[in-house]
Image (cartoon, rainbow, N blue to C red; front, side):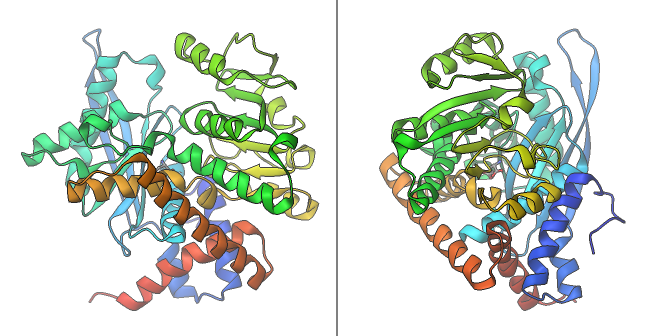
Length: 422
Ligand code: GLU
């Protein structure tokens, strides 16, 4: 049964619950443990008054959902987006629990969100909002409780302001409270590239399993933010051609290959891809249906739906974003049988893995080289891939379900072993 009688109820939360139920069914998890493992542990809803540059005061709403605290401090990013809802943040927190568990990190899962279009704010307004959000959630987070990180709409600078706010509160420099920080403030080498680099690692590994070479590979990416652009660069360096990219304003398609350096420079100068001359303009909907070897949704949830799943022309669907594929689309893709899907909790796990490395370096005050970071990252990705492949064979299920079986089993086992208090 999915969870409908909850404050989190929403299409995206149901999507995460349905995915969970399919995996829990396969391993025959009993009803009590199932509900306990599935439900978010706690959430905080905050109202944040922020003084705007005009002098007016605006109130913003924000959330922090801690889905699981049974296997370590919670971990997960903070999203700034105008469409953020509590249900969405809860679903994203749930996916963080399975992701951390799947790749073997000693963490629970959490996510934060603020309902705001940060693009419309000045830098000073964004700083005041970031600090206020951190101040409001400070009683509920900390290096041993819950460690936030960047997500859609936030970046290193936002993490720096938040770290500074927390450190001022506790009275000393405490970088382990948040990851994805600038290097100067205890950030890890490689964290910026980690999510996209990890996506590219899985794409290469699964293409190799299919016997597809770089020269034969074309890549289309929805979302040209941190994840999409880093994945694009890594796959281009490998020898693939990136033929389509997009952001919130729309996309561009060039069957001969897009000049990524020009696209990145254009986005930096114009704040979006709109008007980029390197190819033919396409809408985001059209982009998803372009012919390509690898399609990488690297933006928001629920973009691969019952409407377009039957029309996809890719050989591989690599989920850089969290939750990009609806339950209905999953079923269509499974029935089609011609698309190799790399599920979000596996595909984009490189980001939180290097966040873990960053936290370790902060706790030890001992910093690693970039080579060391990537070497450790690739080992963890390879281990997770092997475990998922083996589980998929064992249960003869989809790769998503195999990844979730692994992710939820460890959390459920930890909860069962800890018992109930009192
Ligand atoms: N927001 C990223 C994710 O969805 C990173 C989370 C983290 O590094 O804690 O995986």
